[in-house]
View 1: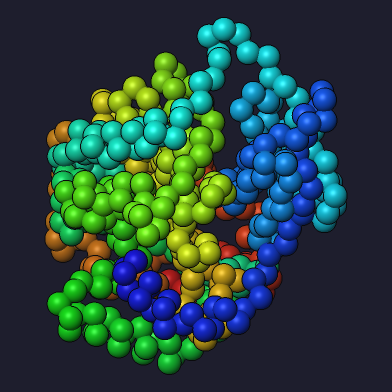
View 2: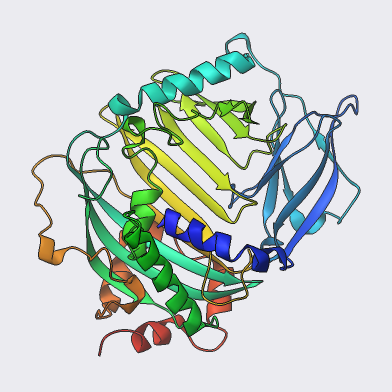
Length: 423
């Protein structure tokens, strides 16, 4: 799927460049509250949407960009040796903001040691070398909740939610053996303008990719989101991949160097987790990063952004019996439904998972599994309202009120769910 979309993106580049991204920003400087000296390379991010982030420069100056619909969010400013500062965006001006960070008093056992550049590279290299032992090597099942929201400027135009059971195999394999069973599905009306010629064009691109002997990936978005945004599947054994043993290991190549910046550390239980930003630009702005557990060199979280943010993948893992399984997977990409291509039209797909089951599995039968080339939004299904009213995972991850208001501007979501279900 990713290869398919990136190929298609290249055909649409001239449209993207013509768009005015519907973003807003504020700027200012981050200083030490005690002596007013600049806080170099302070990290800024949205509290509820941490993938929208930015970095101050060596003078503490910054300009922070974010989607216009998040003007009511809170921005967090952090830097090593300082207390985190939370500020409502609504309280900030467009320019000239002075954000003061309070120094953090550390006890002797809380002293932070910042890795040198070579140490960060070594840490990343060890993390990739340890992929085979840190991630699943046998069959397991995950109960998951999938949600896709689509945007158009400051409005949301589509919602798809699904309860699924994922049966996965060893990460040594590429993922084509995984199965996904759909437990329940519901979706809103489509409020975006869909151009039928774009549907035809995407199909022709898929046919062209197949004709070259390559695999375009599944049409089914649930399977594609899980398979291609779930970290390291097969990469440790494939040549020239991002996480591959013969790939660039986030180190770059002479023609395109890679830069690293230590973003901080956190203590989780008895483990120390280091966050390292990576980029082909110096300094990295934090949009792409790895979080690595110093105990076993496991990558416990990562975010990778491509191009200018048109594509972004995020994954967070939890450790169960010494092995790391996905807890959250999120993918952002251009919504290619018409010729108005740009980052104002995005699909944001997210998985949340319960803890895995590894023993006494009742395997998913092939006839009960989702078809890889069957689009989710055209799947015939019945709406089970009682299921959704008691579904635990949706209670843990409720839909943002701003999204609800936007989607219900013409009709309640419940009526939309009923209208789009099988009779």
